[in-house]
Length: 576
Image (cartoon, rainbow, N blue to C red; front, side, top):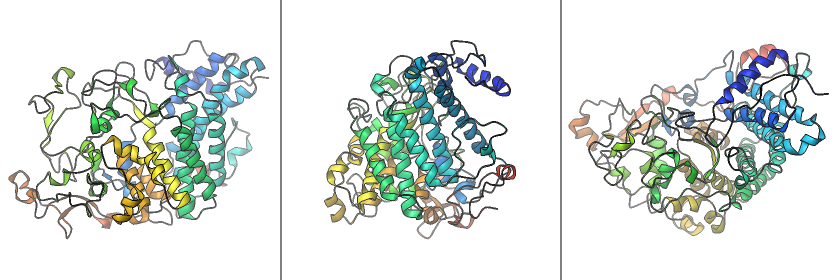
């Protein structure tokens, strides 16, 4: 017999479904087509699709501030997580909201299991979507808390699971990977979608996300000595990434346009439905995105982009990681120009730095600039945007200013947030391959990170190049990941899974070099009295206020009220 939707949940359900009256994108139709009734809903294929539509509002969006938790961007005033000063809290919306989302996915799966046979084939894709989103939710819980209770059905007030213990992280990972495998086997290809279905998850989405999960847990198990099967997890990461790589050309490709050249990397993040770049490319031209939170200027606009006044000040830690154009680190390259003049350190660097950061005394479009003012043929036109003049203490605390992810035209904006892009899959493949084998061939480098370097016209890396120049290939793969994914929210998790957070996060947050440079002598910065280290670099945040306790900070604490309601939940080590 078809289960009834709890009456106490029906108003919430109606509110959720009413939210779907607007669309995330013109070609993703999330508008309900029928009224809601607890005794007739889930009676048709369209009902299942309507229920699944709400899942897409659960996707993360504009998570660039998450890099403030790490060492490569700085939040003015400091970030408690980056400092290691966060505490056990009574309640945490993340925990409760995630389990509420899981209930939505389980509801569809239970209703699908009870559906009449004549509906089974038509609703299979929505079952697969529910499994994908459930896996996504459990990964978010895993990376934050470790092992958590696995709830795979809709609970009521009498369910024993309400007072169950936490599953091990190995059990949670197995559950996630199984959901992703089952979803991938049913979901369509990207090229099979059209019209209203554009933007839904696909088999490529499931494989791409599996490569993220398996790499995360494989390296976590390797460096933290947990019980996970390292080789099996890393093999799954490689295989899942390979599944996506085989789709290159037919389903996905890097956004690399010859007329934009190396600046393709910059413009990709702000594509909209109107002209926002010199090539007049729109979101429809971006086949690099595998999964995204979708927005639209008219239907679902937003004001989300990095604002260095409150967040995302690039740091010396990031800038020092960026290679010179000969493929060598700044400490090895003869092309590195030093720090005497304020623009010197930007010269001869990987274009991902010079398009991610504002370059001193260049002119930039303003985020709220009318499109008619944009003249792509004359970048120095005086009424075009503003001149970046390094307002230290106002627009930047570190002396560096972010440009990546900042829109260049109409505002509020309608560009999307890439949750998963093909570039990450290539990085996952390279890292998992090296971690699994202790080496990586030139062939595998060419099919992965060298494609990212080619996009920005950087030289390829080979085993011979690394050996000749004394480079550690694993560290170069990690460097490539940090530079490519800068300000996309990956760095904190990477430091934790590599078990290097205890080394990197207690260090001082530093900025530009002041002593002995133009900053010290130029009247424009005469009012500065910065704290500097022995080499003359800004100390933006002292190591005295930064800590990372490896006995507890690799995981977050379980909210206190959750444990009070269920004593069987054990708190993570080190948290009281």
